[in-house]
Image 1 (cartoon, rainbow, N blue to C red):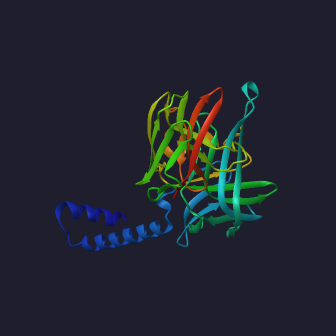
Image 2: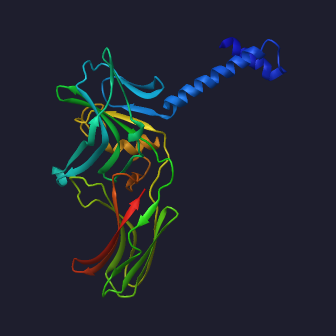
Image 3: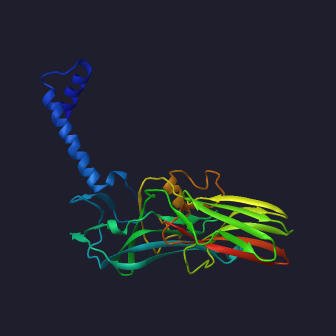
Length: 327
C-alpha cells in the first residue's frame, strides 16, 4: 500500500502519471471492498465500553456484527431479550442506600459459537430497538435496551446491552382530545400532530394551583407510579400552554458490557447507573452543571399518560388523564 499511496500523491499533484494509473485503480478497488465489508458488519458505528475482567471485542465475523468474549471456557448458556436496568434509593437520611437491578424480560435462547474458550455472539437484527429510559438528578431511574446474557457458570453472568438511537422521529397519539374536571371549570385541549403533543388549558375558577404532568411508567417493581415530568403549572385563574415532544437523542451506537451482580456497587470497575448519560453524550453528566433529569430516550417498554391535576387545598386533588402512544 505504501507504493500505491506514493503514486497517488504524485498523480494528484502533477497530473496522471503513466506508472500511477494502475496503482490508483487497485487502491480504489481495495477501498471499495474494505468499506463494503465494514458496512456489512456494521461495526464502524459501534462503540464498546466494558466493565468485566474478560476481554471483549467487536468485529465482523462471517459478515455479521459480532462480539467476542474471551476467557470463559465452557459457556452454560446464552439468552437474548429486553434488558432493563433500574436504580432506586432505599431508606432516608443516613440510612439511605443506593440499589440497582438488572432483569432480562421475555428471555429466549441465543445462538453462540465457542472457539476454544472464545465465545462469539451477536444481536439478532429482529431484536434491535432504540434504547429508552431516564436518569434522575439523584441517580435513580431506568434504561431499557436489547440485551444478551451469558451464563458463565458458578453463579456468574455477563450482560451485553446495545444502546441505539432512534432511526426516525417518534409519532404521538392520544386517546382523547379533552381533559376536564367537572364542577371546577377546568378544561384542557390535547392535540397530537407532527410528532408532538400540544396542551392548552383554561381555568376560570380560583384554585390553589393546576399542573400538567407527563408520566412515564416502565412497570418497575419499585416506583410503581412511574416518573413524573411537569410540563406546565398555574396558580389561580388563567391559561396553561405546554408542548411535549418525545426525546430522541442522537448518539453513536454503544455496547455496554457488565456483570449484573456488581452494578451500582463500590467494587472497582463496576457499572454505575448515573454514568450512562456520560457514556451516551461523551461528556460528564454531573460535571456539566446539569441538575435536571436526563431522559435517555422515549418509546418502547414505557406507558405514557398526560394528566391534568387541580389542587383543591388541604391535600385534596382533582384530576383527569389520557393515555399516550409513542411509536
